[in-house]
Amino acid sequence: MEMSCMWTRRLLLGANSVLLVKHPTIAFSTFAATRSIQPPPLISLFSSSRRSLSTTTAACSPPLHPHSDIGNGAVNAAAAAAIPLESPKMLLKGMSYTELEKWVQSYGFRPGQAMMLWKRLYGNGIWAHHVDELQGLNKDFVKMLGEHAKFKALSLENILTASDGTRKILFRLDDGLVIETVVIPCDRGRTTVCVSSQVGCAMNCQFCFTGRMGLKRHLSTAEIVEQAVFAQRLLTNEVGPFTNVVFMGMGEPLQNIDSVIKAADIMVHDQGLHFSPRKVTVSTSGLVPQLKRFLHESNCALAVSLNATTDEVRNWIMPINRKYNLGLLLQTLREELGLKNSYKVLFEYVMLEGVNDSVDDAYRLIDLVQGIPCKINLIQFNPHCGSQFRPTSTEKMIKFRNILAEAKCVVFMRYSKGDDQMAACGQLGKPGAIQTPLIRVPEQFKMAVNA
Image (cartoon, rainbow, N blue to C red):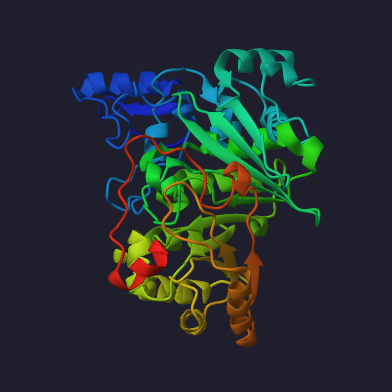
């Protein structure tokens, strides 16, 4: 069975016979019947209370990549997305333009109709959510879409507005779970939308509120893309055009790499949302194999959440370091970026009082990034319920920055945005009664976290 994204699937029923079918669900059941096999089980990381994958995963996705699973129960959402379990309708925002064009042709319409549809989904300020918003398209084509296509992957739950103008949007998924998207206006004419890639997160970074949730599931391509589309539809008139996208919301983007790369590709398509690849930034805690794949397959920008200058500290505050330590992570970046032209990685460094903000840390950071084309963001820590850390003072952050700048590092200070509505960096999500346990604090830092 070919698990490609073609709407028309081929099943080998014998040595020379081929059956063509249009619906992937029918294709799989027919194949299973002829081969006496069972359909693949649901991913074990999904909540046991979930009846099945949501209809948002019905969109067409690429085949499983051999390096997409990092272990520790990682989910490959793209593989699951190839088999819609509830609805025969095709979720449009889960398809790349090439896939959309082939799908449209499979119903007997010209490729030009696909481009007109694409522009109404993503361009021209329409951001269509319903078949009634497709004015100007062929009537038969619109009728087909009404019967066979699904436009929305998310429904609006709430919008919270912070005192600084930051908006936190709560979206409900088809399975009832809720994700959060943040829109950050800037007085310099830049508006950034921060999208989530998972419900919860498995990385258990000790300073991050989302990490307390654990991982519920990956988001599909459509669920990621629609955050940017829906946010623009809701807020463009208030905050102006969106200029930047950051994959820095809920989740570890590179643990869901298939959906993330595909979503980023859709966002930069020049006939659609048309974001500049350098203004679409995907952040990671440091999953080395996926990081290498991302640099090979995507032209979008990469951010690496560093946050420590020794393995001892990073093992504590970012447990992923126990698998991919600082030496391996940074050497990989040196090697990979040496093969790219005019490309800089963004290092994110959340400053924690008494933990990673000393003068010695500043000088170690200078040494660590030697030979890596980079920029460094010093980020003010945003406290949250149950947090054991405190933010570094502004004066100390400035001193830290000045040491880096004197060593010719490109460095910026990033202050909190939206923290009074829990919309700032590291504050998203809503942990339940059962939360991921905190890691034991190393002896030398107990005074800092208990102060």
